[in-house]
Image 1 (spheres, rainbow, N blue to C red):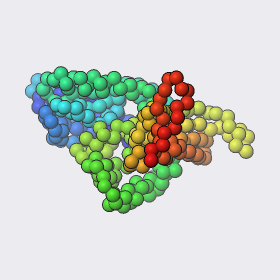
Image 2 (cartoon, rainbow, N blue to C red; image 1 turned 45 degrees about the vertical axis):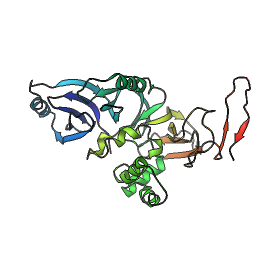
Image 3 (tube, rainbow, N blue to C red; image 1 turned 135 degrees about the horizontal axis):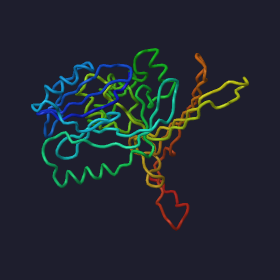
Image 4 (cartoon, rainbow, N blue to C red; image 1 turned 90 degrees about the vertical axis):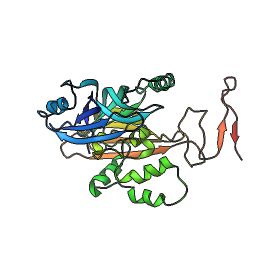
Length: 322
């Protein structure tokens, strides 16, 4: 599944129109939203050709040409504070790595586009300003065609089986224990949501739209961590002269994440602090070359413990909770 790029947001007379397309297709996918104060309501989801898109947009506005609100490179979902919803767009990116013909991009900038017609209140503006201060250029990555939330082995299994690798396991787990409404929604949506939720940092934004759209190509998950790339590295693996692309992916879990001294140990839900999955991928640079992946998972010691940060004492005492 390939996510849509070349996202454009238009303001019609009574609606918001979002268009996007994949790199390999000339047809545009169109998502038409009714302008509403509190809810997201999809009026139409269709596909039009490049030549019919202008006519479609003209029919949606009494003035003949809808106002272009924003251009984006990827759609990260919808978010809401107090009044209404915003669309979350990647507006700037840089290419970080390649895995075969799949490109991985680093987010350089993103912004929110208001979807509700009312004027923002003071509290609404305050929350939006807090959200805007979040710097997405510090280690957030995405790909249109490669699932960064899973390892190479898992992605290969998905392609062979043509279904989520851990779907049956998650459905069984959902019948045991107590879950919050959001966690239950995540579990129920796994049939249409094949990404590994613990590594999707825009998960809450995607959950606001996943029940509204039929086409999952609108959804672009982002991970937080690090992606390193070295092209045409000369690496000897017992056979002299073989050239490889070297890719290093470190994906952080969004559960119980935080700075070193403020988050330690494990929480009541069994999530350890600073859980990171590091994957080293080697791709041979030939037509049918080999590809290999080595995965290491690390995290804080899974006990109830913490350390109180102290600028005077370089190594604060370990405090174990009984």
